[in-house]
Each structure stands twice: as C-alpha cells, then as structure tokens.
Length: 102
Ligand code: HEC
Image 1 (cartoon, rainbow, N blue to C red):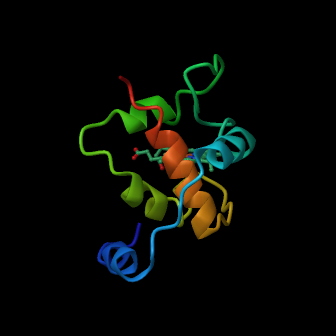
Image 2 (cartoon, rainbow, N blue to C red):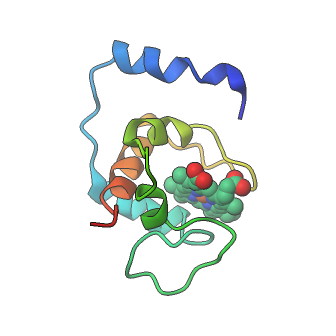
Image 3 (cartoon, protein in one colour):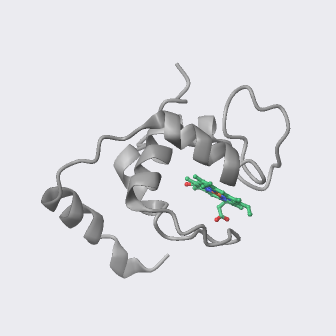
C-alpha cells in the first residue's frame, strides 16, 4: 500500500455524491471472486486461514465501509488484480459491512 494514497479517499468522498451501494451485487461479486481465499459469509463452511473472514473484518473495532471500498480499489498483496470498478468495491464493502457480528 502506497502511503501517498491515504489522503485521497477523503477528498473523493467529499467531491462525489455517494453511490447507492448494493449489497446484493456485492454478495454475487464476493462469491465469484473472493471465496478462493476468504470466508465471505457465516454460511460458507470451507475456506482458508490465509485471509481473514468477511464477518471478522466487519466486526473489527473501527471498521469503516467507505475506507474498505477504497482499500478494494487497490489490489491487496497476494491477491490477483481483479480490476473492480468503484461501484463494485462499494457494493462489496456494503456486503461485508452487513456481516458485522450482532
Ligand atoms: C488469492 C487470495 C485472495 C483473494 C482471491 C481475495 N483475497 Fe482478500 N486477502 C487475501 C489475503 C492473504 C489477505 C490478508 C492480508 C494480506 O496479506 O494482504 C487479504 C485481505 C483482505 C482484506 C483486508 C483485511 C484486513 O486485514 O484489513 C480485505 C478487505 C479483503 N481481503 C477483501 C477481499 C475481497 C472483497 C475479495 C474479492 C473481491 C478478496 N479479498 C479476494 C487474499 C485474497
């Protein structure tokens, strides 16, 4: 992760009207692209322990759906570049956020 990126999300968020995130589309994307490494829902029984599960990510203190959406625009280490669009990452972030432990 390049340090220079950190200020940018704030700027973009302030400039563009919020995209209405669609967690249903996020679920489709997650099941297509992310299950190889992440447990993406409480109902997924098989996964790996190389990557944190989505419920675990959403339940962390300080979890922020918007920060997550921007994090997903950059490919993360060990992950293939999936070239997700801004709308896709917003939808994925909304889907992950919805899995926060109650
Ligand atoms: C090839 C395996 C792989 C795939 C596919 C993958 N990830 Fe990851 N992901 C990882 C690993 C490994 C980590 C642990 C952190 C690291 O080393 O980068 C991670 C970390 C993350 C994190 C950050 C967790 C943290 O610690 O803050 C998020 C969010 C995330 N992945 C989301 C996704 C989403 C959304 C998808 C599908 C679009 C996805 N990942 C697909 C391997 C993968």
